[in-house]
Length: 411
Length: 151
Image (cartoon, rainbow over all chains, first blue to last red):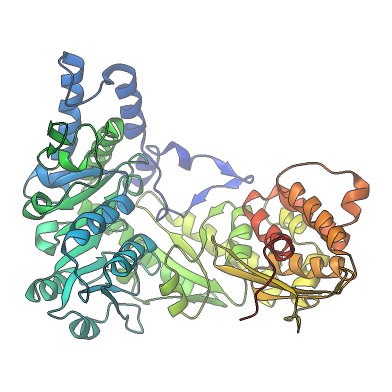
């Protein structure tokens, strides 16, 4: 990995002031910053290579198709899928999860069947299943967390039964930052004849992901949280499952043959990519993946851990600060949620913003989890490998000043 | 800039209202009520009030969870609205809502907001406008939605 200061030069957005203070961008779990390479790739594509894919008979279109399909190959390799046909381009994690619920779920869930998720799910991996269960008169069960915020495997063993058809779980929690035991849950699911759907939104940019080693049947993630553009995401699905599934949307690109009365669907993955796809997005995402691969995901992970090992103990020992989840930095993949005394997270986030620190405040689209922590909302600081110790120090200092401003948090 | 700018947002009067909110209760025998959520933070404001036969607000209160801004704003609203007629109340709430979306009103109209005038400075903090307006929207909805059904 190049030295950090060099690497930070790749991210122009870092080098600006916010409210007249140095910017400390600590909202990476919401969206990552973009390296120059990705920004340039988008520009070059639109300036010189833009054409529609899969249909044109001219060279420009052929080249655009080649770039788009090359992106699929690069992503296939990045997550260790077996075959690039298992990579479906989507708008993002949310669309990927909805796609599975609306196709596989719609086709395979019968009244009385069980869908098992965890209490830690982001709304995007909760509501599609909740609504599917309502439509099908199926039963939605929640796996509880241990007091440390980890997925309770004993509870999982009780909840996942022969009636279970789908298990859906986040790989890394967007609130607590801990890693779910996906492999164990996949084994449990498979032993009971169920499939497992994994929300990888918070994992792909922090840890090496091998969908085959995890045993994931589906794995969804977003481009914009891993240095890529917004509006592009990926759904990995085992080919044998994708082939059984009916289309998600209908239109151009996804058909083989259209008659007046009936149509035949294209092969996977085109079957799930109706309409002109986000071509530039896919190409830009491929550049983001190449950037991460050049750094090496092991090194990215080590850098994240180094930052977390610096920040977490400092936050924990700041008086008045309550950190949620584990006290082990390794169980905080990029994410720390906390509160300061009785201060409302929104008040805290505004105060931190005045000090140039960008954090998220709220329930982080995971209301059931945040309520299970006994609060309505938290402040969330989330790191990426391009953050540095100065960002962490700036957060701690801004917290001290925030406490002082609000008289120690006694509102 | 730093936290100095925060003084603009968190004036003493706001901190006072937030730490000792006025009319912090559910109005018994309320004729109108509305609960609204701030989806970004999960905060909730419940506003309840009693209209007499002349359409005068004879009691008004609020409950719920929220940040300093939203609690202070709700408290200030209850002070302003108590004793007003339904129509006066709605007119004042409209002034506040308008200011929140950048529309201008005369100084005389803004004065009708009482303590809540200070909240108009919130427009400098776009991320917090919803915190300030939640109670005012709840008030408008409480009076303009279908009458409460007993069940």
